[in-house]
Amino acid sequence: MISVGTPLLWGFFTVFVIAALAIDFFALRQQGAHRVSMKEAGIWSLIWVLVSFLFVGWLWWYLGGLDGNEQADAKAMEFITGYLVEKALAVDNIFVFLMVFTFFAVLPEYQKRVLMIGILGAIVLRAILILVGAWLITQFHWILYLFGAFLVFTGIKMWWAAGREPDLSNNPALRFIRARFKISPNYDGERFFAMHSGVKMATPLLVVVAMICIVDLIFAVDSIPAIFAITTDPFIVLTSNVFAILGLRAMYFLLAGMQERFHLLSYGLAIVLVLIGAKMLLIDIYKIPVAWSLGATATVLAMTMILSLVIPAKGKGGGAYPFAAKKDKDVVG
Image (cartoon, rainbow, N blue to C red):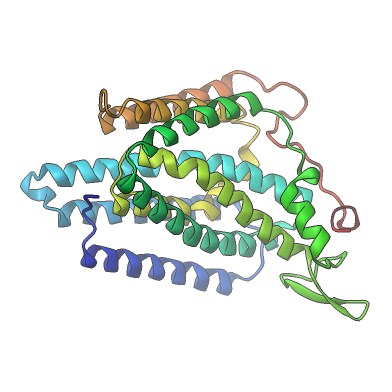
């Protein structure tokens, strides 16, 4: 499989990500547990977007963009398109994260640490899935058609499920965790383990971390094939995916209080998945330019966000996941 990923590029990317995570962890440690304001979330979201574009700008320059190199232009466009698609699909992750936090009544000041750990787990899991996916595509070209059909199916399923209230209490992963681990009935700050009645037990916060990681793994199975429809270059696939994830925590706090305003966004994401799936199914008949994919994705998302502001949501509140916060004893028995 042809890739621009040289040892130097892979090394620079790895150092870049480690440095970014270290700065984020340092900031998290210095701030301690606290409720994240919209202003703080907005500033960090902007920082992560700027960091991502700083990276793709450097990549474009390194590949010879200043000399009019077509490869540099193409790879930069692939990165930006993949980044936008992954960012858009991450919105659905955020709504489910909100549902998990609400179901377990996690205080806002403790959500930062959970999301940070979840992001680390997401980076590792997605890196593994992307490398496996790249190898499969190299060995079996027909798997692109399987990915395309899966994306179309997922998009249709997402459209059908949009606006419906998920039943987290019957989630198989949650039932599995409850059946096999002793869970304390109360939180103990940001601790994952605590003594209860003389027995060391996992706190509900550890269950929340596990659920967040499981949710992201499920969504990764949907989103990773989508970016392979844009490019099969493992370096571009992984870098655009990771940079989209790095800003997920700030993006969560920015959008958590705005989910009611964009109640139609899930329909837009469903359309994007179907379009990308169709692009993958047509890959050997007509290769749709990456710029068209970028334009279509941006247009669909912008239209659904505008329509969300114009068309009122059905039902009281109109939230995507209108769960009321539950007491600890009701959710961790």
